[in-house]
Length: 420
Ligand SMILES: Cc1cc2nc3c(=O)[nH]c(=O)nc-3n(C[C@H](O)[C@H](O)[C@H](O)COP(=O)(O)OP(=O)(O)OC[C@H]3O[C@@H](n4cnc5c(N)ncnc54)[C@H](O)[C@@H]3O)c2cc1C
Image 1: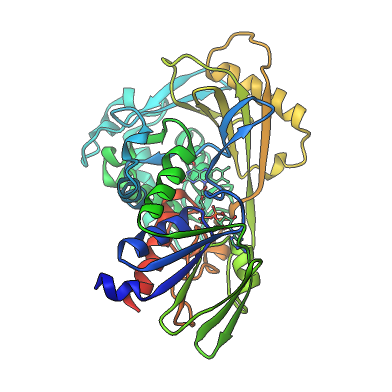
Image 2: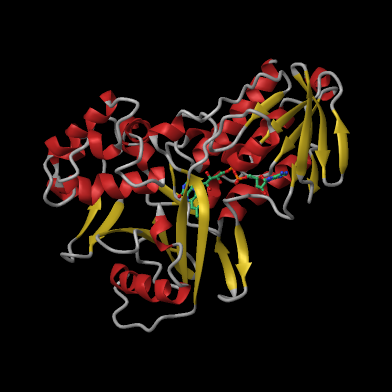
């Protein structure tokens, strides 16, 4: 079987997590893979880099995984990087309400029976067990319902838990975000038991966990990597893709050869005529502050009622995330740095510490907008061309645009081609 697969060749275009995952699965099955990446580095929207202003290495954005991200965990095991993630031994989500100064930690128990709901010390202050069970309404939400339609936006639990989680997971405001997508996220986290909710972050950086070990594994499997190889056009004849036009030259696809297109939605829509793909996006704004906070402080804190939404403690920086952050896209960076620093200081009890060196990173099109209308535009991995499969967090994964979704999409594209 492996020898037979070797005679086939697949071009994977895009070395983000979707393309890396597809390449991994194909190469493990013995397929000859050529991985093309337009940039000079892999990882796409999930990577680390040296920031000259801060004088240290940072992640392009804060990424949180949970232990229940089964495709991401399988991927990490396959590239030998499962031990590069860190997190508390039991699920724990620390919050601070900036309006009242109250702090709490949401602490689901590890097992499947959610007895933690009966323990006020593990819940959000001001909520009862019944409030959590009301989220079961999401399971019967209609395709057009938004998060704010399906849940009660006036409830304390909404402001202090569902809204922060929904905005972070969907990268879309609750008034527009699709309830069915949040239902899926909660089913795979809280619904799968506390062990699945355990938060995990990279110990060193996104690239050190998710990208560099993957490149090493792909190299050991004989995958050929082509940097600066931007796909410009695709020729199709009948039901097949026949030619790929890259910056560096053309590739003719012999019978049996195939392509996984693992680029972003706008690029895929430009390259493939008639392809339906999400076309509305949301920004993510990140602020990085050069400060090594105490190792005894939490790995992250969720903020209610602030401009900053989540603050992450990294080795050399404290780092803020604002999801669906389009309202801040035009705010001058120095204003934003000062505004968010006020929330960071409170989150990590830094007293009157002066603003340290900072960096603001605005990802204008961080993910597609997870609205009901945009969900209908997500295509599956299989296309009407027999040798073209799609991958990317924007394809129909059933999940929001996340690491888990991107990796699942890569696995799905590879599985489709291996079946074909
Ligand atoms: C700031 C930020 C914070 C986030 N936080 C989280 C989080 O907390 N948890 C989580 O799970 N997810 C998070 N995400 C989402 C996650 O990063 C993405 O879902 C995931 O990285 C998408 O991977 P991808 O492979 O689908 O796409 P991409 O990473 O965009 O990869 C596409 C690749 O294709 C390449 N490419 C484009 N055009 C061409 C071409 N013509 N030819 C060749 N190559 C091309 C690009 O250079 C890129 O490398 C966050 C995203 C951002 C931006």
